[in-house]
Amino acid sequence: MGSYLNPGNGRFREALNSSVYVDKTGLIAYTNSILQTSQKCICISRPRRFGKSITASMLTAYYSCGCDSAQIFFGLKIAETENFREHLNQYNVIFLNMQEFLSQSENMEQMIRLIRRTVLWEIMEDYPDFRYFDPENLMRTMQDLYRFTGRPFVVIIDEWDCIFREYREDHRAQEAYLDFLRDMLKDKEYIYLAYMTGILPIKKYGTHSALNMFSEFSMINPRQLAEFVGFTEEEVSSLCSRYGMDLQELREWYNGYRFESVPAVYNPRSVVEAVTSGICDSYWNQTETFEALRMYIDMNFEGLRDDVLSMMAGEQVPVNTGSFSNDMTTFHTKDDVLTLLIHLGYLGYDFDQRCVFIPNHEIRGEFGKAASGGDQL
Image: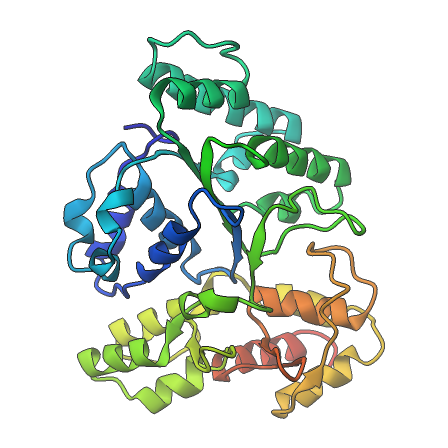
């Protein structure tokens, strides 16, 4: 069992041991359905504190051959599926939290080199007896290991987009990072699943994407994975019964994200804090100040402030999400700013009407603080 190659199931055990755990293992049924298919690369983008890292740990615990997770999945939804044991702990899993590597590096070249060296070191430690063509070439070594063992890879990347938050203006670093991911993941027969998660969808450069092999599931259109974005009405209702909370109160505070197949989606972090404390309050903003929201509101795009005022009054505002470049610096119109706020979780999105809105009381309070913290809207 390694830290990056075939990690154990400890992180997921922590989630299961928590006072509140909502079973989202049904997602594994979907990832099992796309293993070794042309849809095997998926990118899941969600706002901060919407359970992205827990999901990555869940997938690691399920697929990694470095642990035995049969017992911890017993009684969960995935255990009821027909092919549950067929894929359980059957793969070489590479788990990478990109924020960890970024924090240990001074530049992108150093970061990519650190990732390669780290994974190669663990491969050589776990599988020392094979003759590798080039033990300093990560992709070739993964190919060799697959040929020798017959065991495919599952690659799980958490915080995939942290580079675009830290290197906002460094386009050369961003391109180098995307090229590294493309070279590692694209058209590799030994990779049966590549799962990336972060806040932003995949970065666009003009009409070209270096990672065009990925299917994307975002806050704009989570498609068939909508039930895994946050907590559903049924899940929150069950928590309210368990903790003696008023469902209507939680609905007003934390509901409001909606998708075609799941009309009610709640902020999971805030729901957990509310039911465990017994108090509805603003919890989601505790990991980020309203200054971030205010910065985007203060961008001087014509009509943006009026749109914010309309939404604070309960109205929906039309938006064109198609021009957004999927980064945090390239803004040409107010639509680009509004689209970013959808991905950050500050706005809900009506896919059918192509409109944005403030989803709930908690977020409306954030807009109010952002407005009062600077020039009045």
